[in-house]
Length: 226
Ligand SMILES: [Zn+2]
Image: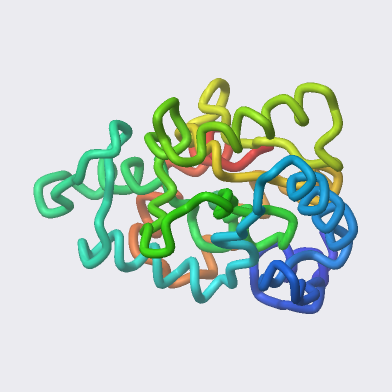
């Protein structure tokens, strides 16, 4: 993998991004048009696409990581219940964090092709968006929106976007709010190898670095490899 691509993949640069004024977010240049088209299509169907999170830098992801390791940021288990980080060992801690947060350098959010989305058309102005599966399930405020997206994706009419975290084949729990532009994200992730991963971690100063390297192959296969 060349240097430019590695920098983009790992969130070390913003050269690949553009600001989308209407949607108020930084995204990969190549998804500007498909995302605009998706927003327009949703609008026509009575939904208002809201981007909760798009590009995230390495530094930002590292802040999340370190806050989860230290217990400063709430850590949820696979049932979305809080975990006491003081009571579990470092390896369990690592895998608990990996349920919901990726290791800095390997978040799909570095790519600019991946987005956390919801629909704000009928949302109360003081509603606090949490991004939980409960919000997306029946009775949840985003259920109709995600059901509509499901249909678009199923019919291959979602402008190239898909859901990478279905909870079926990967270690990461289902995240119905997370959309990815398949072609753009694959252009990066298809070049990623176990060697690139371990090399990068080896040169980092992340908390739980030793545990990550000890379980590098499992982590790579379960959580990172597309
Ligand atoms: Zn996401």
